[in-house]
Image 1: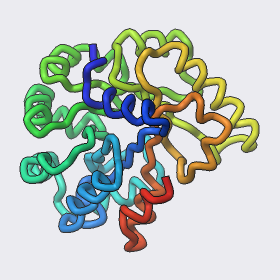
Image 2 (image 1 turned 90 degrees about the horizontal axis):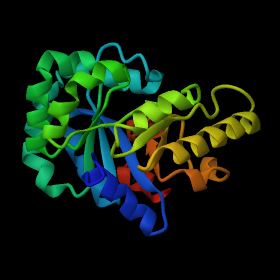
Image 3 (image 1 turned 30 degrees about the vertical axis):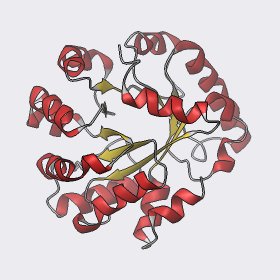
Length: 255
């Protein structure tokens, strides 16, 4: 059970105050190793409720070109889990937001799931989003994650069946992450209708907060679906913004 997880509390706190929780995603080491922690601290200072730190991987199959390019740049600078944990040891006490890692399973497996879970607990990381780890493969690790109060955050999409949603809901996750395809397939109105229907289904199936991500760059996109969304994740839009040399504060002001 993760209802007492800090991630749930942070998102619920935002909802209770009448707004969507904000979940920025930044690959660790982006835009540079030197600037990364300043970016995280500024996002936190500007009201991020949960911060998603991307663990760079050479084959990020679920990510678009912007995130992939940023991740490769971080890898080229030698960013790895040890570097991230060392940084968190220095900075975690100054960060109010909940923290999650988003990464692919291979680096986590190489690091060792038990070792990773213990290091996450020590570093104040409260959840893992692992796009290529399906439910059946995650189950053997559930106990060790829970021992360290580390939430497994399910990713669901427009093509996730109701039966599958119910299986994920039984995990009682800290929140569920819905992958939007807004602006990628179908007409805008058609895809928004499909997305709205799926969000309603997710909302009815899960007891935890619902986060929406992938392709979100402005508040306007949420207009017709906002009643079904508790939190918004933004990655590519923020990465592009930072890559242009602009500040996290400017980006967060738009939300």
